[in-house]
Amino acid sequence: MSQRLGIDYARLSAINERLIYCAITGYGQDGPYRDKVGHDLNYLGYAGVLEYIGAAGAPPVLAGVQIADIGAGSLLAVAGILSAVIARAQTGRGQFVDVAMLDGAFAWNVYHLLLYQLSGQLPQRGREQLTGHYPCYAIYQTSDDRYLTVGAFEPHFWATLCRHFGREDFIASQWAGGEKRDEMFAFLRAAFRRRTLAEWLHELGDQAICLGPVNHLDEALANPQLRHRQMVVELETAAGRSLAPGIPLKLSDTPGAIRTPPPGFGEHTDSVLGSLGFGTAEIAQLRAGGVV
Image (cartoon, rainbow, N blue to C red; front, top):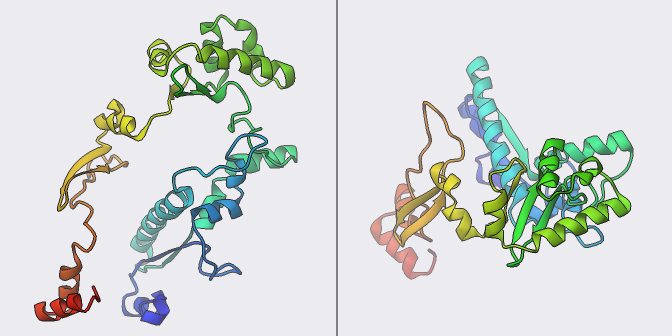
């Protein structure tokens, strides 16, 4: 596309050698998949990441957020561009930043890849340390049909949880399998089903267990930590009040800020066309003809 429009890196860098040009694609600028179409779940599938998400014996589950698009695409693009900026300060030249969402998604395999090389066994969905196979790192249902996250991965967190329930005998069996694992799961599932999510958060929320709620979006928007960190920003847009995520990077000397709200559909059409040289009458004609 960029070559067809005459705005590819080769042409533009010939005009300005300091240019940093970033392209985010699904599969990258070369290789057999270069022209293949795709979406987030396709990249996660090819990368092997989707294989881990879900319960044992059940099909893979979509994560619900765009892991490859945002985490492996947009965020890596920022890292790549900033790296190129640093390099330019040393060399005086810009460069092409090639970001493939498949590449980025595959890089998220680091933990499972390590275990695979150590054990020689392929990771199985719902049967690994961080996929809900063990009671210390799992999701539990409460009496009001809400869910609680327990991430007592380290031994001292697990010990605190076991002692709270008077089950010191579970402490040494944190990574046990078979009947012992089933026994611990059965006990904890039954225990957590006896009270509501709010009651458990009140009772256990301040203990060193690594525990928290599975929040609904409105609860996340009202979360005191996110609010304190200015991660929920209220903006005034042409359509009225709007909420947006804040700036997740907190810089001590040059903090970021949202300078303009997200535009409404077509809100900037006239200004963009005007910047391209179209006059008011021409824009009106384009609108009348259904072009814009």
